[in-house]
Amino acid sequence: MDGDDAESNGTVRVLHVDDDPAFADMAATFLERADERFVVETATNASEALARLDAGVDCVVSDYEMPGMDGIELLETVRERSLNLPFILFTGRGSEAVASDAISAGVTDYLQKGSSTDRYELLANRIENAVDSRRSRQMLNERTRRLETLISNLPGIVYRCRNEPGWPMETVEGEVEPLTGYTAEQLMSGEVSWGEEILHDEDRDDIWDQVQSSLESTDAFEVTYRIVTTAGTTKWMWERGRVVEQSDGDWDVLEGFITDITNQKQRERELERRTEELESLTETLEEQYRYLFEEAPVMAVVTRTEDGEPIVDDCNRRFVETLGYDREEIIDHWLAEFYTPDSAEEMLNGGGYERALSGEFVREDRALMTGDGEVVETLLRAVPRRDARDEIVGTLALYVDVSERKELEREKARLEEFAGIVSHDLRNPLNVAKSRTKLAREDGDLSHLDAAIRAHDRMEALIEDVLTLARTGEQVEDRVPVDLSEVSERSWSTLDTGEATLITETNQQVEADSSRLQQLVENLLQNAIQHGGDDVTITVGDLDGDAGFYVADDGPGIPESDRDDVFEAGFSTVDDGTGFGLRIVKQVAEAHGWDVRVTESEAGGARVEVRGVDD
Image 1 (cartoon, rainbow, N blue to C red):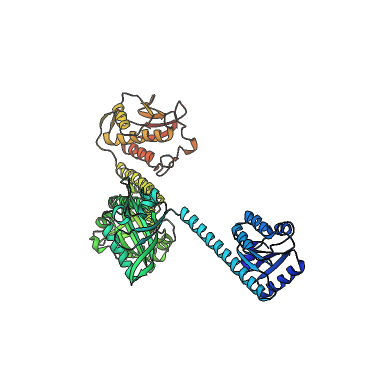
Image 2: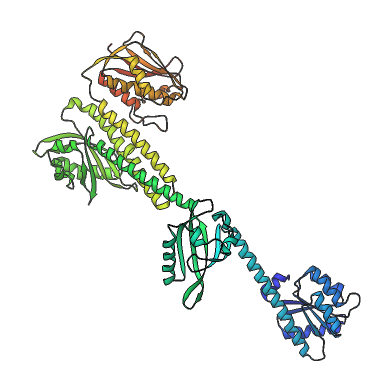
């Protein structure tokens, strides 16, 4: 058992050194009777005693006169090994000279032997006092060491001060100079006042009031404030303290901890700033979404579910105008009120609405009823409507008026595109932006704001392309001669071209709507830049033996398996693409009566040909 183990269970190990074995054994017996904690071992000479010290001893009791090395010499040797080990000289030879030598050598106590057993009780008491005193000092030293280690590792300042204006410091430890520029000595000597010279003058009175108010109701306080360093830098501090002494009922002495929270404050301000910006941007995008909803080329109705049936939450201008109601007569009414009886029956009992609520994209024929009792035949595309938690709470119902059948196929295609964009491609990023902004406020995690910004960027791109799609589907009536080379150069100037190169090999005059032709060319050039690489070379030229032109690049090209799909809405092979660029190209071409197709360029890249062009 070593010294630490003995201390932990209360045992006191005593080494009694005496050249008379019989006396040593008798003394051991009396000592162990006097205190049950004692475990006494004996040695008959100094050499034997020194050999046993390494095994762990709490106190040495030694005779003075022994062969070889006497008790004083043993004491001196023990002190070389352990300065604080209790050593009691217990000898039958008592003299002032021996006592003086023992004291000079650092003896813990000195006691003469006697014939009475009371001497052993006295010796036991001396041993107990010496050991307890040493253990108390060791414990205090260990606690002091731990406290100093803790203070040295704390990211801040530990202090003790008087609770009066200026908060004069009695003790200051820790990172005083790194935090303030002042030394601990300057604060403790009163050369510098924490409350009057370091505390920011705009916070001084308020912090005093806060601390005193807290101390009136409890013995602790917690405050946040600013300080000014010797370099003139403003830092934010967080402080927690409590009363440790009182005098005549007044708070007298405080102890506490101060740490630098400047970085946290900066993050909080940045979070607030970015959150405000994102909220403003979200409001703007909500307005754009609203505009897109109102200007949609189809009738649109947003519903919420009550008792399993759809209630109109919102509807767009085309729905209102087609049915001939005021908006107030539609909002918050049952959607079935605006259906013919047969269509209402099919919606509610045929499972169409229930299927939409289960997540299915429903496509059905529906007959609406105007305010004048006229029937409007429509093609319905109903998609689930989700909230910020991605839970289905209703539907987005889009209706195409198919009363004039000659527009049916074109309107169907536009309906499919618009439904997919609004219900998923556009609404989902908006939900992401809202949710991420909310999480940023709750968690303080700026990474949520980065995700929200990416969602906003995608929505802006989608809204711009969708509005373009909504305009480019109409047939072109008025055409003028347009210089294809000038259109190409003008389009090129509007794009972020990087290291890309444009070559124009045409003098062709094209009979077209100038603005929409530029849309077509811009999207072809943009597509080539996105897919061709940073240093792509793009050529605009005339078709050989056919009326029309081409845009070709020397990039990786478009796989033959994808060439029939590239003109579909939403199809893209790059992560940041909206998938509407070539769809816009096709719509503009069809509006002019032209044909467009994809093939391979001479350089192995992509080549888009526009045929049937009048010049």
